[in-house]
Each structure stands twice: as structure tokens, then as C-alpha cells.
Image: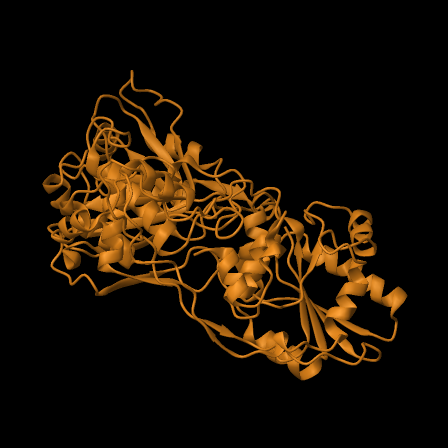
Length: 135
Length: 436
């Protein structure tokens, strides 16, 4: 799948990927289908790709007017360092936006497991959430 | 979740994050990026991150987070519906083999070694290796942390051709593909994969389970393993660095994986597939996933009559994390020696290894895998993690959480009492016969 084409289909500028991720230096050139050279025997190669699922667009939740007096959950997903980063964010809110009520929680289970009970609790008791992924 | 939510991601995962949210249907999700890494940083360093700028947008990080949660949504951010993504035409325009070869490389559809160009004729020939219909859906596989792709028998055949398989190998490839197990894992840990093949098909295909069995000395061993990687790459979109593959260093085993045809005739023990509940005459492929395999550091004591191979296995496993299983890969000379010393079943050897390969609780807790995976399980009350986390630091516990984390296979040409140890977990066994 051409990643830039896919982002274009979804209304995202493929330029977003420009200059990303210095560590991933191996990029595919995604060249155009080849053009025949004169004289040589030619063959038709088959596409070896599988079939991706359709992408269902999910609308984002409406935003808040402001965070004043609101409860914001900080969710540590369990990657190394994520929790410590969130602790600093909690301190930042305390010092710079003291009217914001902060609740810190580490998601249950390893980072790749869903935690529907926590999402339900946050929706019931919170106004917004910040999820921090470390590494 | 239904309330404003914003994720934070380190800059090293920018491409992954953008593509992930797009493929999951929220292409405009507002993401704040931090410098990388956040692990192993002091509170002061992390405080500087928080008070600094998002390294991608250049905006002050905390202002960006507040804006993400409060700036009204755009029309694009409210969109619903479905988007179908194309992977291109079924067939590419005619060209020379040389040009096509380069085209497949340039579009990341190979392992960057020469492939057989999959023409209609080649694929039709491959399809003769199975009675299954070409358009039957064979399975689904996720390359990376994305929803899985699906594929037909014909699409698997295209990749089997590219890898250099003969039609008679095809049922093995279909069995592997049907399991949905990719051999290219997105993890930053540079995973390796292994497949153990049991049953009469090993001889039918002329697989090598003797001298040099794990080396590049037999077409079926080499091509079957390679096909698994091409299947993972093309049918599941796996192995795209920065997108579906994040292994920091990569793993050489990913070229054609660790393919082990067990030497059933020379082994004193039941073969692996029988241990997993299959009949001896069935053809089965069993898959393993983990960090890789390490050679035993030369057998000790073979010049005497008392080499303690079980202790040597245990020594080797003692440098492994224990998060993955332990896979003993023993030459038949070792297996038979162990049998003569009383280990007349694999189970007895596994029991000994499980009980005698140990670690302290302090060592265990110090590992990142324990922090990321086992500690949350302990909090959920799962055993043995809950008990282990409640024990004192100097308490001694098994290296693996469960006895069945240890497996044993026998392979090799009996030229030396040699063994290797895999940091590899058993995942699943699949019938090959169902795909003939």
C-alpha cells in the first residue's frame, strides 16, 4: 500500500511524513510500474499484496470550551518512561493551570491490551484525557 | 472514548503514529510529540521536555495539548464513512525480468534479494500444490499494530513463487499463512520467528534435518522460511521500517526465519507435534516467536562419560530474559545421551529445566519486559506474577512463569554433540494436511 496515497485518500497531506523518523532510514522508492525495454522478452508480474480492510472514519469527540474547572485524566499506557513524563505534566498543571483537576492512572494490563473498564470510568468521571506513550 | 482525548508520542514514532491513527479511522487525530526517548530520563530532563516545544510542530508542548483539547473541531475531524484503500493493479505492465525485479525491490515487495517474478504461468503451477480453490480466503494477518489484511490462496501462491518454492512446498506455506502469524513483528525488539515442521512431509519435500539442518543447504528449508517473510511483508504489509516495523537493530533471522525439520528418526523422544496433540503420521508446522537463538558455548564434558547437558542448557538460558520461552534445539547425540541418563521423555527434561533454571525476584523485577507486561498482570491478580511481585528481592523463582514455556526439539547430523538455545515462545501448531 502506498502510504502517501492512503493519507491523501483520508484527507491528510502526505507532506506530514516528510522528514519523519530519522531512525527509519530505509525508505521504499515506490517507483512507477516499469516501462518495457525494446527487444527483450517481456513478462507480466502479478501483484503480491494482500487485501487491506476498508477504513471506517471515526469522528473526534467535541472539544471543551476551556479546561478551567474540568477534570483531566492522565493515562499511562505502560511503556517505559510514560508514567514519569505524565508526573511532570501533572506538576505543570498544578503550577500553571491550578483550576484543572488532574487524575493520574496507569492503564490495567500490558500496553497492547485494551482497558474498556478504564475508558468507561474516564468517560463517566472525566472531561478530557491525555494518553502518554513512552519508550 | 467519547470525550476529548489527545495522545502523546515520542518523535521517533512520528511516522508510525500518523499512519496508525489514519489506518484506524482517525486521520486527523491531534497528536503531541515529545523528544525521544522518555525512558531512562531524570525528572529534570522530563520537566524540560514538558516546558519545551513539540519537536515536530515547534509549538510549546503544553499549549499544544491544551489547544488539542479545546480548539473546536474542523469539518474533516467530524467526518464519517468508509475509505477503501487500493494496493494497485492485479498485474503490472509487461517488462523485462530485470526491470520487473527492480520494480519489486523498489516497491518493498521483496527481501531485497532476487525473487522469481510471479507470472500467471508460475502461479498456476504453484496452485497445483493444493486442492484448495485459488479464490478461497486463506487467512488474515496483521503486519504491525494495525487491523489485519486478508488474502486468498492465490495471493499466497504469488508469494510462494517469489520465494522460490516448489508446488509441493505450497501446503506448508498455506498452513503458515492460515495461522495469521507474521514473521515480521512491529516491536522495537527485533523479533525472530521459528517454525518446526513435523511429519512425513519432511521426507516428501527432502527437507534437511541432518548435517547443517539450520544452514543454507536445502531448498525446502530455505524457501519455506523465505516465503513466510514475503507473506508477512506483502500479504500483511509487515516489515516496513518506521511504519509496520520498528525493530531497532533488525534481525538476520528475518530473511528466512529459523526453519527446523525435526529429526524424528534419530530422536529418542516423541516429536514436537505429538506433544502438541497431533498424531505422528500427521504433517504439522509449529511456530515460535521471540528474540532469537544462541549457540551453546561448546559442549562440555564430551570427553568423559558424564556430560551434564541439562545443566549446560540451563546455563545458556540463564542469560535470557525468561519473558519468552526457552527452546532447546539439541543434536540427536545429546538427546540420546540424555535419554541414557534417565531423561526418557522430553517432559522429564522440561521439568528439570523449569525447576532448576532460576532467578532472584530482584533480577526478575529489573527487566523491562517484567515492568511492561508482568507487573500489570500482577496488579490484575494473575499468577504467578502476583505472587512473584509480593516476594522479597532475594527469593528464588523459576526463570519462566510456566512449565510449558520450555520446549525441546531434536535436529542435526550427529557430527558433534551440539545444541542451541532459543529465547522463543511456542505460539501455535497448524495442520499442513488441511492445505494439501
